[in-house]
Length: 84
Image (cartoon, rainbow, N blue to C red; front, top):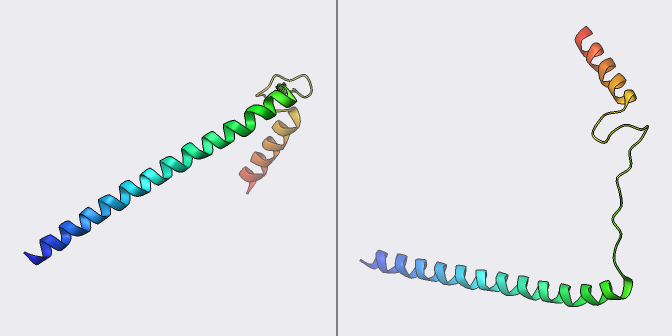
């Protein structure tokens, strides 16, 4: 019976350590969120709004379409691979 009480004690210590660790992480994250909000809010007011950068397209192609140079390079690589 001595083994089961030691095992129960270890499980109790493990559970306590887990809960303390989870509470510490939660407290740290809440503190970090509070500090970031108190620093960022005054900076946002002081420096104004950040403008969003619009994605640019190259060579008049729609975004998501590869350029003709990339298509040519891929085609050449496939032909070279198949010729081996």
